[in-house]
Length: 166
Image (cartoon, rainbow, N blue to C red):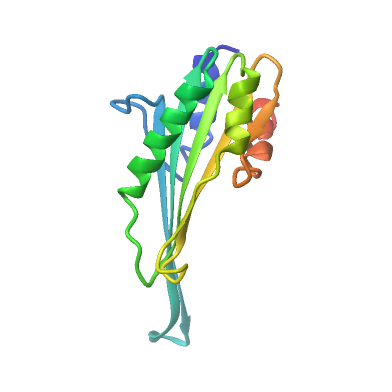
């Protein structure tokens, strides 16, 4: 499978629930956004018990053999761009940033950089929500997957997408 085919498959898995953009997304290969609003009422709408907003900003990048410094720079760009969109408030629950990397070969230093990258931010001591950085990478030649601590759930997603399961 070529990088472009893998990218099409990965981005395609996000099309149903996310707003995906593939043009003018430099330096990334694609971007996606998800926004959800939830509320609960007690019998009538005027008796609102709670409401919350949840967001996710996803950045895709495909490369033959990405180096650790380049990946760190892209991750910082994604984090900064997403943080500029976050609007904390009393109904804000979370705004997470996900960075997904596709590579034919994933060098050990890049894999290590992904595992050791950790970014989190709380707003008003957590009362106005939080943001976490999730990183996931797959080496297409071997199927090996690397994630950071917050991106552990991405292992299953990447494995399902690239093993043929849906």
